[in-house]
Image (tube, rainbow over all chains, first blue to last red):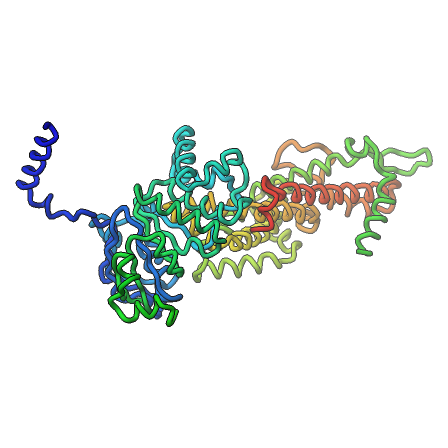
Length: 277
Length: 267
């Protein structure tokens, strides 16, 4: 009975505040608006407008060179680190443009973490220091807090059980799959809100890939994940939404099952059925 | 290989007879032989001390400057200013060392009235060492793969922090090797010291005092024809200098072995 009353109250409250009702059930985390990107004179992204939902996995697929990696590198402002790179348009993180004047790219990268194609642990650091690096180098000195963050991140990356007795070993002494999970843990340790993954399994064997796919699915309770992949089966397995990019343009975007089963665009269908790519 | 072996053989053969505790720890002394001729006794401890002091002093001056310059050139030096610094650095490293000696002599020793001193010698050697440290630092930092920098930037680490704690730490074995090898390189320099340090028979009491150094001592001893024992002491001093350089090279080996065996080959 008390439950009934509470629901009633909530409904009333919502009725008096129409803004609350009009909020979408699944809030948007990242929106790109007419995003264009260049390398010198090479126009690699053309007017890409994409809405990425919070706490879901969004896959970006497309043939090589279609701008998938550039798209996610624009989201955390890594694109501009390449000499001669240019960007126009907007990327909204929780409705705030990360390209607005006065926004520090470093603070954007703390909120939007990234995992790269090839595992790239810091070669001279131990497993522990690799995970703690983001916090340590931003001034965290409290050992108890660092210990907690390292354990939590390694747990999330399904690596804790394998390395808990070898935290002092070199990060580059781990196997390829472990190194990539170490890189995931390193990115998670700074507690980002979004995790961008740039073909994280392309250098890994099927077993290591399966492990990473499992942990990606696990991550979406706490994080918004955007994964770039050239592997369509992988996109179908791990993602809730899929965007298909071709020659720098967003061709189709939607629910993964829908997009794979009844693509609306002919180009998407031809790509999915392997007619080109 | 053959020249190296024959030099080593000759130096050890002639130098070993000069070695004694007194030779390593004593100060130079002239004695008069019963025949009435002068003979050299005592040791070269003063010269050993002088060389070690000069090496330390030079490293203290040149390593920090060279390190900063190398980091700057590697990370921010892709512009006109950087290119001209790199060019000047290359020119400096090809400079004849005696000219650097003359330069320091005329500016520091005579011009600023510092006089012959350990300090003037350290400055002269620093000018020789600086371009080597700068170059090796720059080269080792450039070897750090882009992916490592990307990883650091993607974690939201500031560029200067990433440069010091990630890039420089990844490149450290190369940087340390460069610094130690350049110390070994200057430890055998004699030309710039001839005009800057003077000579001394006493242990050092201050950096503004004249000082002795092994290469200069070898030169003086080996060109001494009238005092018996001098040539033999010269060979002994040469042996000590070679052992010193060898020790530095060993130190390089040990320093770059690092905590993680595999690391070195990866970088």
